[in-house]
Amino acid sequence: MTDISVNYMGLKLCSPVMAASSGLTAQLDRVAEFEKAGVGAIVVKSLFEEQIVNEAEFLQSQSHDYPESADYLHHYLRQNSIDRYLELVTAVKRKVSVPVIASINCYSAGEWTQFAKEIEGAGADGLELNIYSLPLNIYKKSDEIEREYLNVVEKVSRQIKIPVAVKIASTFTNLPGFVNGLKAHGAKGVVMFNRFYSPDIDIKRVRVFPADAFSSPEESLRELRWMGIVSALVPGIDLSASTGVHNGTIALKQILAGASTVQMCTALYKKGADSIAQAVADINLFMDTQGFSSVEEFRGKLNYSNIENPGKFERVQFMKTFGNKV
Image (cartoon, rainbow, N blue to C red; front, side, top):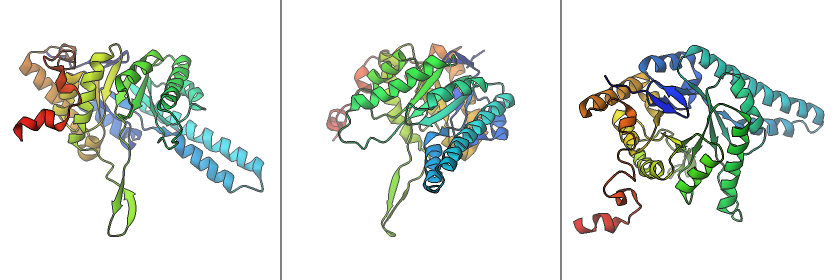
């Protein structure tokens, strides 16, 4: 009999399919459906540092004549937002029996390092840090940006006992080296990759507008390359695939490349809990067909270290790959 349970950051998951942080994981009826469908863990909708800061700055801008009032409102707004998020984490934890991972979307090392302790107290089994700010300072060096990430991870990891994962972008100069640095500073997991909202241009109205927020299955291929490389070069840290995971086939590819878990988001919006149930069924069918009794038997089987020609994972020029066919 196949066993699709996995270990992710020391947490025992009944399956490698996770519900990614989204508006859906803030709804108790939905998380219950995801658990029934076979989800391994729930990543609760993120609390955004940017939202709290912007709201606080707006209040301050409206209170020039009463600075004391602005300070009070700033503190109230911050604490109220945090308290409501803690209540959400606690409610989700009570609703499901699978591990519940809280999420903070932040861009600084400020108050959030203290807030992590409160998340732990609310009952979260783990914490996912989604750290990113768009680099716009042309004088800021890349190693300074990486150092800011590492400082946040180190400060948070020192304060709490629950495991910390870091959700990262794919744009680091030396991605395996950066993941290794996160591991050295206390991260137990890395989520690959953060998918940002992108701008688009409407040429009829001559304006900029948000592009489609949903991912496509094809986007998983970029992630697949780095999953295969990083899982081979940086042992001892769990990797979770989070872009373009629309079905069980893509989930299996990521696991074969070295992922411990996969996270579904767009698929949940489009097909609901059925996408989880189908992915779980596909994983079971694959294992039965191939004769694997556990996920660990095939995880990373096709990563950079285990395939005959590792150059297939390396960056190659178009002509090197397809030149002989042109």
